[in-house]
Figure (tube, rainbow, N blue to C red):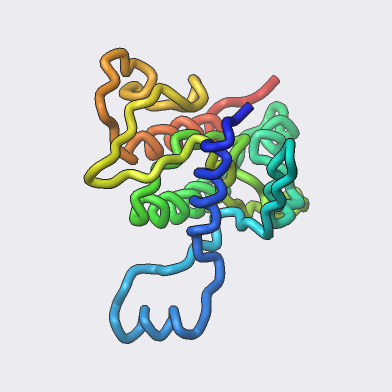
Length: 187
């Protein structure tokens, strides 16, 4: 169960992501050589409803479920090299965008990578679940031991002295995720 502050942080981060490529943005990119100013590989927030007891975050429909579900359906088979490359590229693009905004996700894993389509050969993915994400700046840092044990970086997992870590922990987690979907065979 997330605290209200954690949910508000997640909503703020999700709403900060620009999901729409518009002509103004493209003109800035072309004439001013600015970095990409939108990200299509992060799930978008449609709206947020607050009630007395609950906060409901309505996100875009991801018909394919999670990558964890797709992996479970792949019993006895691995993803091919081309599929692994396509999946890794999409998540790396999402992480590049987040890290350029000084956001560290801290919970990259197959369950937080959602598939856009439901077809077995559709591997368009988007990153989701920003409940453990954190804004980093010159005045704030990440030192909390959080995330999923199997995927978190050693500096997060073994952080007994609460030393600061960087957004590089997301890259470690993605590496562990890539290993799982490319090498591990489920029985």
